Length: 153
Image (cartoon, rainbow, N blue to C red; front, side, top):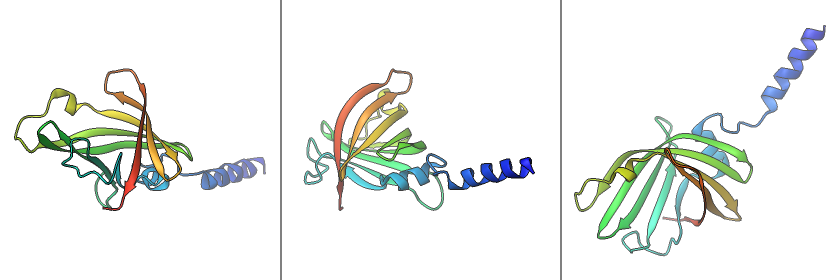
């Protein structure tokens, strides 16, 4: 009788537990990170300070984060595979990214730093998100404050 009670309690707590971090796509959706974000959606990506990051979770394959930005005279597009995304709480998510492709408009090779994997912690600030922590592969975590708004395009 006691075993049945314990098994029932364990099963019910498992079924009612939130799916925080169970899979990368689920956590991205739950947090609301899917879509396109920018520090300033009114700036074109071709502007010196224009940039966008788009999170996608297709039905097939891995979740991705595509970063588009201008670096000097070159337009750079980096597609990252989302290796992991874990809800920390309802207002924070940790996302691990690994660059898969880097394309530069000037044809030059990407720098070694552009091939680094990175872990980011995002925090919800109303309708915006903020990167509050960054950790590049092999380096200590640093605190940062970069605010992003959701872009309609």
